[in-house]
Figure 1: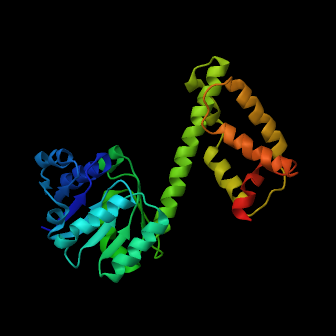
Figure 2: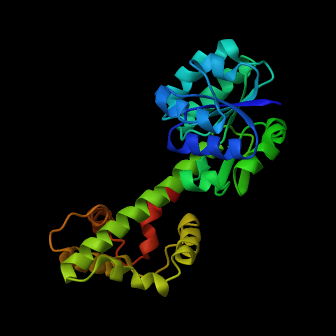
Figure 3: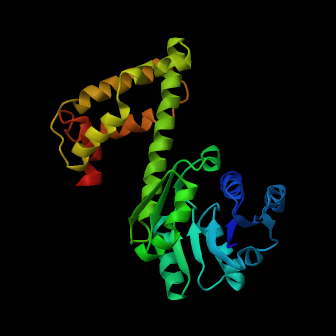
Length: 282
């Protein structure tokens, strides 16, 4: 049976390993904190003491690590045991520029590498749900496509440019983080009004947030700032939001207000709220 290696067995990596073992795969594991790797041994994982030992004989090497520096360090450590035909599948959220440089460097050294970040949490990983993004050579992707499809409900190939998945991952995480910050601010506003935070989510029942983002996002990308919701009026609403918050801690609204004020001072108050993207799309 072919061995697959997972290097990095924290919350997400460990969940991937649990799912693979449940499918009957032969899995070797390594983690900098050895206890996290050893916890998978009762499930059938082969625990290695070094990255090189973990990847020896493996056809695929999955990296689920912290950042670019750790990825580069672990790749250096695994090299002595890496099979020349093995493919490194890197699930780490990385900086696009460093991902592209890494892909070029490894390609020149004859090491096959694909960047495959994910929109998957540990619970989803155990159930093979969520999405895997892939960027890199199409022929290389085809070699691992079926394996990745066993890991997630959706596998999205973005193209040969090696940093495309890294860009998409960070954009997606920006939505997650930004929306979470706005929810926190809405809860602060709810506190200012003396209502239960959960009650402030009621507007989501009659607002199509995904549709709003998609529709307004297209006009913003096109540089179409014809008014339907004037920036000056939106700024007035943000002032009311800040007043409602009553001095409570806010994560996003003050920065939004600051940017609105800059654009209004430039004489753009009569343009659509979409003009917030002017500098990004000009």
